[in-house]
Length: 157
Image (tube, rainbow, N blue to C red; front, side):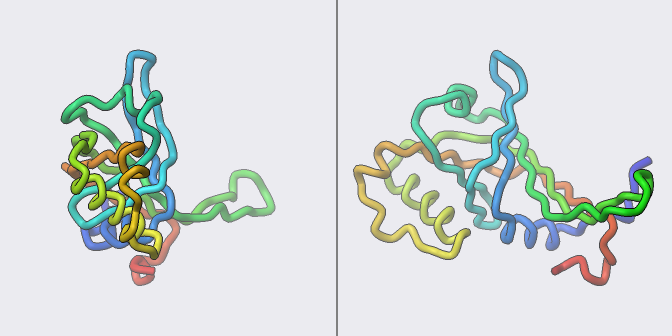
C-alpha cells in the first residue's frame, strides 16, 4: 500500500536534490539495466553529470534517451530484535531525457553547475580538460519524493 501522506512536496524534493552528495543514475543498454553513482550538479531545472568520454555510461546515452535518477539520505535504526529494525530516510526518484553536450560553452556551464553544487566554481577550468571530459545534461521530466520515519515538521532539514 502506497503512503500518500509520505509524499514530499516539490520544494522538499528540490531541497534534497540541492544538498545530496551522490546521485544514482539509471540507464539501459544492450546488457540491461545499469545504475552508477555519480557526482552531479543541479540548477533547479537540469542535472549535470561529468565523466570520461568513453565507457558503458557513454555508450548507453543517445540523443534524448530517457534515464532515471535517485538521491537519498537516511539512517538505519537498529533494535533489540530483528523485526523491530527500521529506518529514517528521504529520497527523490526522477525521470528525464539525457544528452551529451558537445558545445564548449555548454560543457563549461554544466561543469560550473557541478562545481557549485559542491561549494566551488567552474571558473578557470582549462579548455584541454573540458575537451576530454563528457558532460551529460538531464532535462527533468518528473520527480517523486518520499520519506519514512521522519517527523513531517522536520521535513526540510
